Length: 212
Figure 1 (spheres, one colour):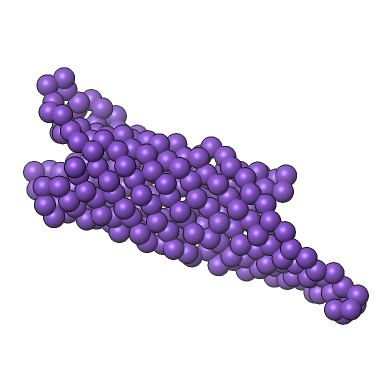
Figure 2: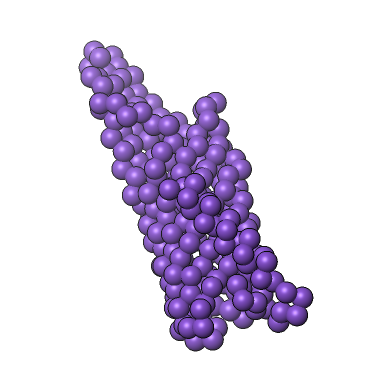
């Protein structure tokens, strides 16, 4: 699914680049805000008995950029995304571990919108992602009861370079404003507690966009 999405995005951006002509009209700046939910798909957590993952969370993104008024409305963008958190729990006998993993990141990429001579449009976007992962965990190991067991907590954070890609469909409310639904896949990388932590987070959002 992720490879297919990247392939479609690459084709769209190549077509958009080819459609940019020297005589195209100038464009303008835009601001978009998206709110919705996220799903953490991987991150190397174990698929073993006693491990439970709750991956659904809220998500939001804000983007600012410039878009040219050519046939494909090719543009550049930068922005920030908050992907909420993933909760997990592992228990085996007298041992238990609870963890919360939060992710966010800064984006820099390209976007394009195909309007087909109607208020409806299809959008594509993709680019680089500088992500931040923050982990908080607590554990208990009570083989001989609370008086002789151990417990504790800790936290760690790390950053890394990844990528994002997405597609959406929307409707122009006015000449300057539009509303739509967007699917984005964010591939995050970081090092936490000396180990590599990388995986994909899917985000489904309702997006409002305004052109200046």
